[in-house]
Length: 326
Image 1 (cartoon, rainbow, N blue to C red):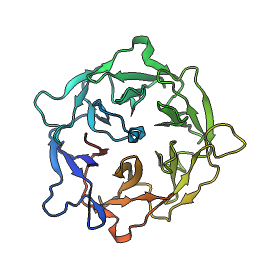
Image 2: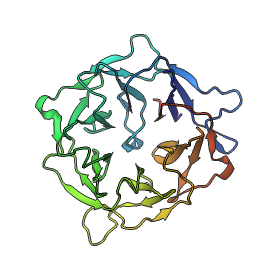
Image 3: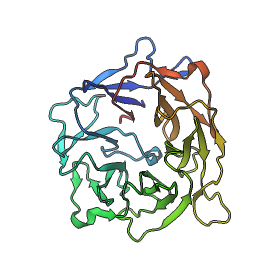
């Protein structure tokens, strides 16, 4: 069952399955069911990296970037530790093995199945704008030595945002970057490096100040990511693919295909997940009143659930992740 893992201010971790009953989806449990189970305590780490860290069969929904079935965390000492989620909890004797060292809170972390080996791997951007790959072998992150550096020139001031995704339609992810001027570029990844691979401009004028939220997933279900871009209280859908007959490569449409009503706000938290159907994205928001609102996405648009869109309340959390236990 899909759901959410949350972290509270006191370091408690709780598991909330996503229920369906009486024709509605919600985090409120039906009669006789439990929710909000404590699955960890005293978790005071500096980074939380959900991923598919446990090897298993690889269904198509794993092409989604985000969420996971286990957690890797970064502690104050720069160590990465692995916490598998078993029997619906992280609390097991002997768990929390050190699986990497020498990492920092100031690095940017991107979890995806970078090598296509059936589990997540870790791509890191350092303070110099270099990209470094850390392959997960099921027990720890493999030391690639000099080969860990797989790209450069991604300085955070010039490239504020990086979005992993299957942007070229291949078997391993690539990255979409947003430059500070709003230009969007795809950098191909061949499973080993970005060096020597294609760099393609796929959009422009998506400046961060004007579009503070870009929500990436396979919204249209055609095998490549699409983009929901927030601007002026609306979400705008920009399909991605072979959408321009004048170009022989994937790109975004010049104009949005659909946009929402003015129902959204810049200071909300946005989480894309596959709660109803694995492989099919929907949206959950956390507003300033700590209410959770659910927006199912069907046929190229959000369904307005009106009074039924609230699926949770009083969610005072520091972190939350969509989660898909094995």
